[in-house]
Length: 224
Image 1 (cartoon, rainbow, N blue to C red):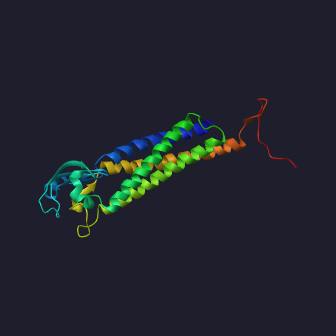
Image 2 (image 1 turned 120 degrees about the vertical axis):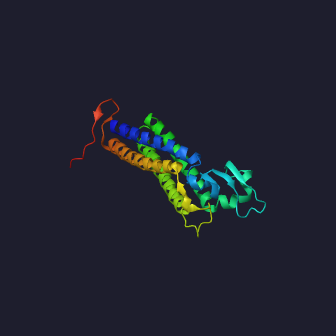
Image 3 (image 1 turned 90 degrees about the vertical axis):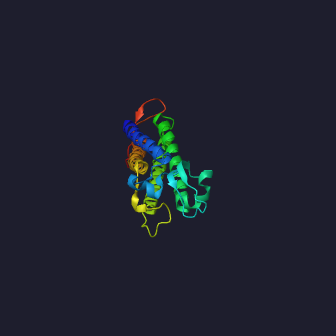
């Protein structure tokens, strides 16, 4: 079981680092950022999954000339007049999927620690490792889909853009990059987890086992 322990430990390290990156990227408002040279004209500063920052920004549908300043939660009362524009359906879908991805990775990480501590011995070890790896992989795939969708939608040409103004003056920032790195770490971590699961399965099936009186027995092919 030493090989399984080492594989699981390596998988846990990758997954924990990936989860830290994911949480930072998930909670910060630097997925999309404007070029500092054009912030005065656009009014947009930065945006994340849950928070958007503006400086003297006025939306084209704001007939009373309301200016938006500072960083506010997407669903705050401050952004009520422009919520449909600021938080379109595709961004809501990303928020939901990223939340699901976070939950999967959190549950997978907790289960990984429990397995590493020996809570799931015997045949249950294989099922636990398989479940952990599957959850981590699915979480990574979901975050990858979200990253692709966000990248495409935030980089539409000016004529087709129906979201943040001057898309050619905006760029994907470090929060987005952290989630991307987290996805790669989750992928490699899940691969190590799958290898650990298969190794545990083989060792449980063909490895040495103690019988009822304490002697070690080896599995042998039946002789005819």
